[in-house]
Image 1: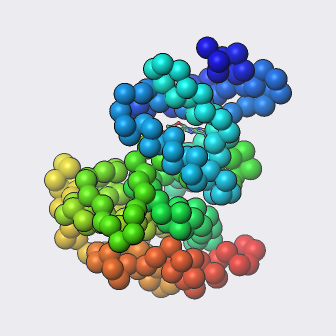
Image 2: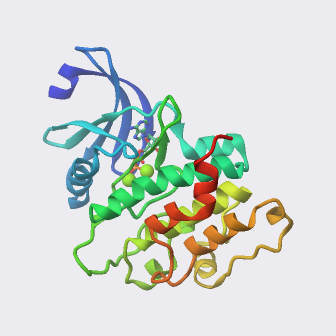
Image 3: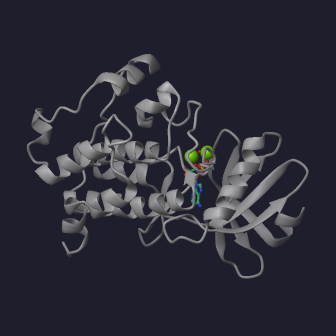
Length: 263
Ligand code: ADP
Ligand code: MG
Ligand code: MG
């Protein structure tokens, strides 16, 4: 088929619900890319292709290079993020310095703000879906759950990873603010190395998300600055209307302090 005429498919990078991701090398130039194959048959797969086409081009979002289509699948040829997933970097590094955490959140927020400006809610912000290039630049990936928001319309349907899901998703009516909540969950994990809302079952996790308030009294918070806690509270505000927007996060003093100076 056409993609194999132009690319040599080499190593597998990941396997997901709807397909797999492999490294592919251009036969013409030798350049390497990542190829995500999505099995057709579900409407949701068409949406992922559309979203990538709509958003690709921002420096914080994985670039789509080409799409090949055959009877069974779509093959998305994307830029290769050879630095792996943010999740793996977090596992390796443990707790992040505030300087590093602020830079991660800033890069992520620039990408999220772009999505929101383009009328798209990602709905699956988590460190498995944040990739790194060979030079360590962050790229938001996996638009498989992304949707467009039409003016003033709210979204429904429970999606995303349990630990990262915003409380209003569990109730039913939500907006692009769900991405800010999920990024707040990530910030919590970066600052103290653990997730904010935990439980032994799905129900227990959802219960914690709906009811548990942030508690900064534990010893692990002693070394976390007040501005960092303030930003975290603003992102993990249960009421979505008072929760910070992407622009608010980017303007927060903690972000400016750590990203506008060298370490
Ligand atoms: P899924 O919808 O199945 O979660 P993803 O788009 O998140 O699919 O891709 C699954 C995994 O494949 C990612 O977590 C990552 O490890 C790898 N991957 C995806 N896209 C790329 C890419 N452009 N470069 C490098 N690795 C990638
Ligand atoms: Mg994914
Ligand atoms: Mg997906």
